[in-house]
Amino acid sequence: QAKLPVVVIDGRIGLPGPGQPTTHIVKPAMARFPATVENEALSMRLAHALGLLVAAVEARGLDERKFLLVERYDREIGPVGDRLRVHQEDFCQALGHAPEHKYAAEGGPTLKTSFALLRKVSTRPAADVLAMLDTVIFNVIIGNCDAHGKNFSLLYRAGETRLAPLYDLMSTVAYPQVSTRMAMKIASAGSFEEITGDTWAAFARDVGLGAPFVRTRLQELSRLTLDLIGEVADELSRPELSGDAIRDFAEILRQRAL
View 1 (cartoon, rainbow, N blue to C red):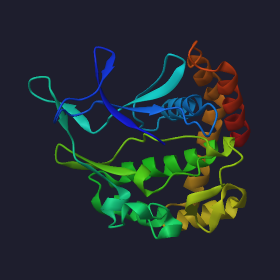
View 2: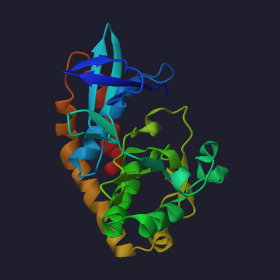
View 3: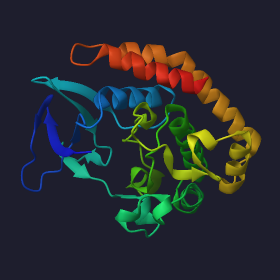
View 4: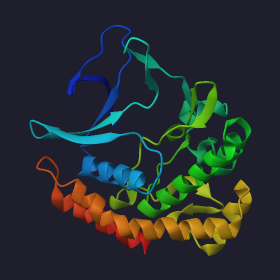
């Protein structure tokens, strides 16, 4: 997916000057797949509604071109109001994998190594492990196969190392032409169709969590999705977005959460 780093000042989007830290990323609609802006906006807003830590996003339109505006989480305000960069590294970097090996099948990060990384380096490992669990469950609920090692990061801020907010969530199963193979297996399951109750129990053992707790959290997030998806979809009702597409995506997520 094409991405353009930009600066947003008083609501206006511009290109950064030399050495100027960008504030946002523009993600235009993908030509290959319909309504990706609506899909990603719904997925990100739903994640936020469920309590997951995600980057702030805004769907916009310009001359009939739609795009998602994602606020960078690796920035902070300096002493004179300027933007400063905050160091981060994705899980491929943190675990010593080459960026081209972002998928587990290519030798990249796995869920087991990702959870172990958080336990090892996070300043608040318990909180970040639980946040990672919620992310795994959420990606299954929405049907996001592309949760690879470069989509998870560590953020180094104020002497702390924490799991960074999510910034790239989309229901890939909404597009039949996209493979349903997951970027990281859940236990031995390589696709959503292979996930069973036993899969979640094996996953819990792999990442050092209790199976009853994982099952309970799966049920809680599924129930919350059913409770909130309609409200989140309604909040995205605006002229520049396709209401039909949002309703279609919402129904896909609703059916997956049942």
